[in-house]
Length: 201
Length: 346
Image (cartoon, rainbow over all chains, first blue to last red):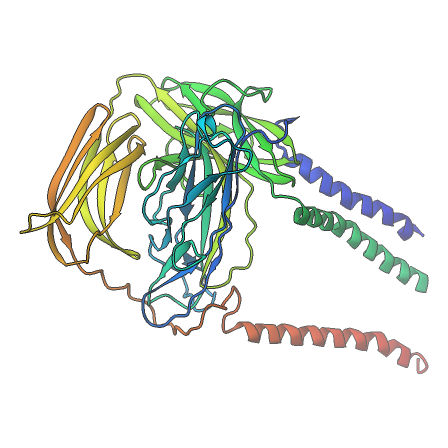
C-alpha cells in the first residue's frame, strides 16, 4: 500500500526536478518579455556532407549549402555584417582509420564562392531597405583561421529581410568544395561552420 | 506477494514515464517549432534599448571599470539555453573584423569583460538582462581596443558521416569597442608579398599589418611581373576592409595565369586615410611541398559510407555485447524457474 502511495510522489518529484533546473539556469539575471520579432537575426545555411572515395590522388569533392536569411528589424539603421568561419577539418583517433593522436586536413581546404543576395517580399529593396553588399569577389577559403566577411549592410541600409544564395561551386547544386589530399586517412574529418551576424564597426 | 510484485512493476513504469514525459514533450515541441533565434543588444538595467551604434562602445581610462547591460532575447518558437561568451577580435581574411570563436583563447579585450552569467535559459519571446563589467587594465595603451560578446544556442553534435562532416553553428555578435584616450595614430604596413601553395591552388598573398592604434581600411595596387619580362601577369586594384589595431592580414589573390616556377617581381602601393605604404621585392614560385610523413596505416576506399564508430573493431564489439546480454537473460530465466522445480523436494 505504501508503495502505491509513493507513486504519485515520485512522479511529481521527477517533474519538479525538470522545472527547477530551468529556473536555476537563469543565473539570477533580470527577466522580462520582449516584443516579438525585433532584432538582428540569422537562420538557414545548413551545409551538406562531403562524400569521397580515396583513389591515391589529390581530389576535390563538393557539397551543398542551404540559402540563409539575415533579418534586421531593430529599426535603428546601424548596419550589420555576416561572417563565415570553419574550424580546421580533423578526425578523431579510432574513427575509421584515423590514427592515434588524430589527424587534420591542411588549413585552406574548404572553399566557398561569392553569394548573391535578394530582398524578401515585403522588403522595399531601396533606400534604407537596400540590399547588403556581398563582400567577397573570388572563391575564398573558410578554414584559414580567421573569419571571412561575406556581406555587409552599411549604416541606414539593410533594414529588412534578405535571402542569400550561395554561389555554385564544384558542380550544379553545390556551393562548397573540400580539397582531399591523397594522403588523407579513410575516416570522417569534422569541422564546425560558424555563421555570425554581427553588429559592430 | 503477487500484488506487491505488481505494485513494484507499476511503480517503476510510472516513474519512468514521469521522467521521460518532459523529454518527449520537449522533443515533440522541438520538432514542430522553429529553432531558438537569439538577439543580443546593448540595453539599460531595465532591458530598454539605449541610444548608440547597436553595439557596446565606451571611453575608459586605464585602470577604470565600466558597468554595462546586454539584453539577450529568444525570438524563436522554441525554448533554448543560450551561451554568452566574450571574444577577442582580429582582422578577417580580406579585412573586416573577425570575432573569435568561443573556444579560442582569451587574450585581449575578452579578458577585460566579466559577465554575471554565461548560460541563460530563454522561453520563446523571453528576454533577460545580463549585467557585465569591462575593466580596463592599468597598462592599456591609448587607442581602439576591439572585442565582442557572442551569443548562441549550441548546436547538438550528431553522428558524423561521410568524409567531411560540417556542423553548423549560428550566432550573433555585438562588438565591444573600448577607446582608451591619449595620443593615437592610424598606420598600416605592407610586410611582404609571397607566392603560397594552398590546398586549393597557388595564391599571391599580400601580408599587411595594422601597426597603428586606430581602425583602418585601405585600397592597394598589387603588381606581379616575371623577372626579365616587362608586362605584369597581375595588376589589380584591391580593397582592404577594416583592420583591427595590432593585427595582420594575409590577403590572398588566386595566381592569375598558368603556373610557371621561378622568380617574379612584386610591388604593392597602399593608401589609407591619412597615409600610404609601399613594398617592392622578389617572389619565388616553387612546387608545392611534399605531403607530411604518415605512420603506416592502410587507406582503403570507399569511405563515403564511413561513420563514427564504424571502424574495423565495431562488429566484434557488437558481437561481444550481444553475447553478454543473451547470457545474462538466460541466467535470469534460469534463476526464476529453479525455485519452482525445487519446492517439492524441499
